[in-house]
Length: 495
Image (cartoon, rainbow, N blue to C red; front, side):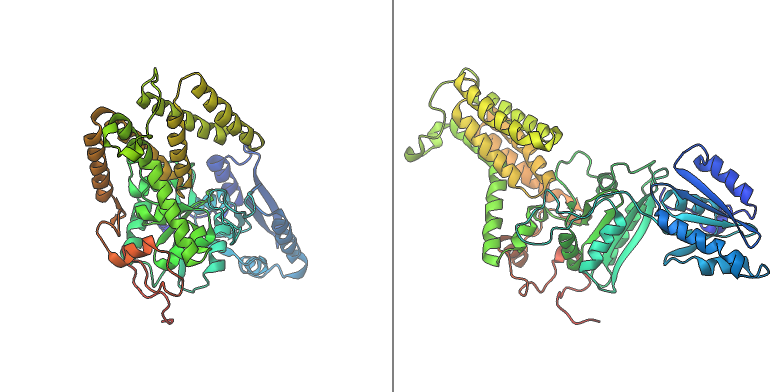
């Protein structure tokens, strides 16, 4: 569950510090887990306890606050209101009052320090979190020649800060939830209040609040599976990005973003098929160069999906080729059927991709050379494969790697294998049937009630033209209608 009930229905913080300590021992294993700690001091004849988790707190802040409170014994009268005096001396910008034991536990495990005062049924939560993690760096899968080199990291606070750096609008909102009965993972919903569609925000909140799970150890991917209920559909219904500039652009277009703690990726909702074909490099070049890059990418995606099935059709039906293209197809007979050669080649490429993921970086290049040069050439020399199989499968693989979205490239790879099977069984009718089923299937998909193939189906001429041609920034004055924004005009005056 991601929310607790009202604090008045929960157990209040005990006025006896010993009972609080006993509760923490029973509830979270204080004294058993080495990283859970408590520091007890006397302030104006009252016992004050500090609860914290080593590794999640900034030690320097804790020492500084302890010193300030200890100095109260020499500078304040013992007859004063201890609660108010301590509150006034907690020299930190993020201090909140906590009233229940459950909230006390949640805050401690989130990395805050809790201050409990003898005789008071309220405590203080001080946000001195210092989560372990790396510094922002350029994402490996979304590199650009020119442009910012910072990217999201596993720290949700840093990620929201990178977004605020780009959008300093007072209407930008980050609403945070805790999801997971055991993990209590921080999940933030980001949107621009006067742009994002309220119904879309409500739908996402409803779906997130309905998540009932032990924990989100797989972070954003687990959230996605609850959010869009994808099932066994291989095509991605949300888009991921690790670039702060891409996230900020989608926020200004009216999308709603989901930030999940411990994940360097941000979920963009809703998205269409064509959202997964966009890349930041297109917008870092001139409109002409960006359009050229986009068309090359479209050609690569087309090749990754249809090149090998089309070649197989011509191999099985040579009569379809015009006289000048008769050279297409194997020149020699092979002991292994062409379809099996293609399957073995695709399987080999998948082995190579998995091996590259699991191989240490210094060895990955050498492994790729060995696989590409030695294995491929030897397979041809011994007669296992004909050269054209290697050629077309390799070109198709290049198209796969040119697809900006890793999830979309994997989905297209699966569909390519299905098309190959249909072509091998039924030839041209199999290809036509497979294409028809694929288009109908994609047209039937919805991403948070948004048509997946928009603006192709349903057809929107202006929006489809923007898919084909990268428009200049001054010329992009209308937000896409697929997100149903409250304010369609991009460069309007402040309300």
